[in-house]
Amino acid sequence: MLALTRKKGESLIIDNNIEFTILEIRGDQVKIGITAPKQVPIYRKEVYVQIENENKAAVNAKNLEKLKKLL
Image (cartoon, rainbow, N blue to C red; front, side):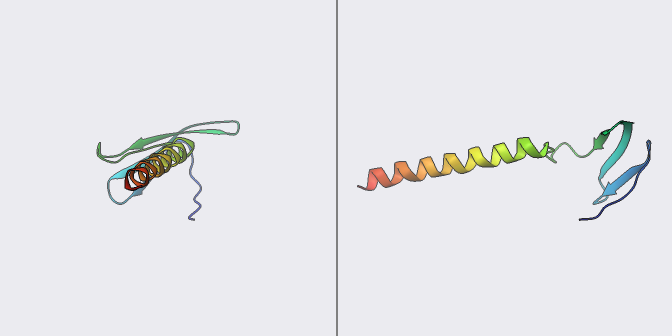
């Protein structure tokens, strides 16, 4: 993990086309702006984990149905 210190208004660039900008710092919260190409999906981690879990459950359910058809 790379840890960097940024102040309000400062940015980070990733892979030449994704920019993170610190918009606001208020107490223990930081507001971040993200500029990226439209084809780059951006999720909060808790949402991403939920999507992964639902996808895994769907795959397991499909596999179970395929196994039932074989029997």
